[in-house]
Image (cartoon, rainbow, N blue to C red; front, top):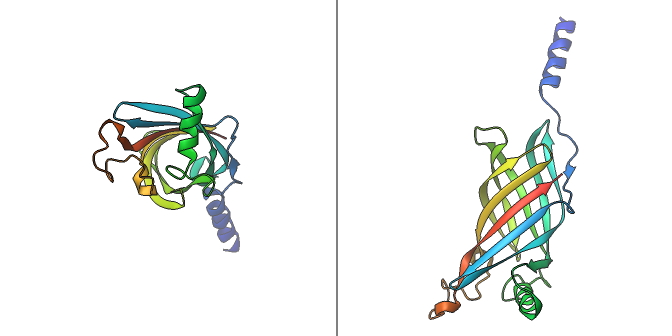
Length: 187
């Protein structure tokens, strides 16, 4: 009887895979691309990941966190003074206020399969400019990478400069509230 219980316990323990140590995100190989649109065009660029880790149980993603260095906002569609001016404005209090809020953070709360290998729905909390919001988006998870494209509404993070949702008569100076992120994490 004791031996049977020991075998049953051992089988139960081996069937339930224990959590592994978090896998660090390789910030030097990971990318975050952004795109913001306005009535008369768009701007795009990139921003650097500061740190992060992803948690796995066996080979299944179960959680994680990554931090974006907001002081690294880079515009790739402009050059010279126009580039410098836009980057400075995006880092100012009109937009991301990076002196007071130098980091943005995302924490995974839930990972659900979408029914296809490597295809998941991620639910988590994103914090930008001191405001936290739960978001949900599709992602592809590979052996050493995670990729997602998502759209965020900047006004939900108290970023209202040039927003037609808050100011009248902006005309062709209106900046759309939604901005796009294309994220690829390597680990």
